Length: 425
Ligand SMILES: *Cc1c(COP(=O)(O)O)cnc(C)c1O
Image 1 (spheres, protein in one colour):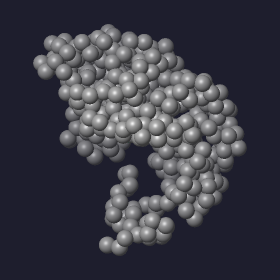
Image 2 (cartoon, rainbow, N blue to C red):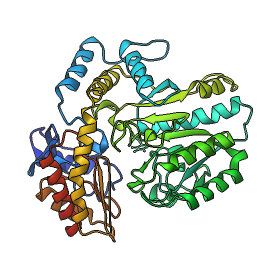
Image 3 (cartoon, rainbow, N blue to C red):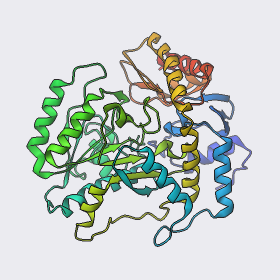
Image 4 (spheres, helix red, strand yellow):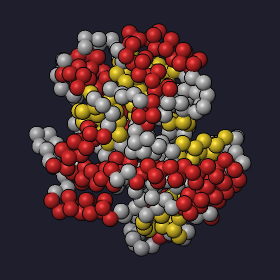
């Protein structure tokens, strides 16, 4: 094994290729990987390519862009105090301050906060909350979850069990996963929801006595297919959960913090869930942190379960660096600038309707182009980079969820990148 010089791009890439796993890739025959040497504002700097606009915002998290002075400062100041202490039996100002803000800004009633270390863990915790709540309510037979097809909720086993059953993640493990109940995908944005709602209500009624909770991504199905759907469906979810005593879990890991045009996607339907998962943009893309919020009612149910406590506690729970930078990110969001930015980006993304594609979907600061065939990712990536855009297509989808700080020119670059990727891929 040779030691690559940290300044030698070719050596770093060679070592990476030999030893480092990347998301959803083969170790033996990995797809090409590029070396990032810097990032600032809406741009990342790629070795051999130069500066490009980041159309992915680091998987939808870097909403304020890179090296934001306020976020950098929050991180530095907390590092000078202390970087981490265990959360068992101890607490600290960054966690308390973040929890206070989350309770204040989230939909009504969500006032108990669990700080997890990743989105998947926050969904695991949400599902565990629902199960323990039902046990506490003396309904131990309620161990399954209702969801809809086309969803994505993370990569750990319980999360995979509520991902789209026909997606690769789920189907590969189907014999090992808990059997959940899947309703049809909600209709596309603009379509009538009546028939779908009828079917979904009937399915819930059929399985109700075994169901602990209903878990969905509100308003936009993200990694399961980048599909926005009508806000009326959120009211159907709320009604179904109420009618059958299910814990309603909204996974807003992708949609939270303004991405779809409202601060939380739940607001678009005017409903509050019983449990809410937040992640991705929570720290403005700086560090891994997620949160699961629940109502006092759910917390009381959990307290009534045999153990009387919520059985979860990650080593890095409530990490102070992550909490401090999350509060600084919420300060930036509190100025309300995000709303103008998201609207502005939305206007710019309308240019995607000129792309030659099977379907174009634009919601908030999300722009999606669907081709009529699987994208050749390598070719599409090259073509987008040639236009100065970093994109990461998957399946038949080429899309962008850029940082809110993107200028109009950046958004135009991303649209040009998507058009070029669609043509090449
Ligand atoms: C990304 C995502 C997750 C998983 O979050 P990780 O931090 O990657 O574990 C769960 N749910 C949704 C909706 C997501 O977009």
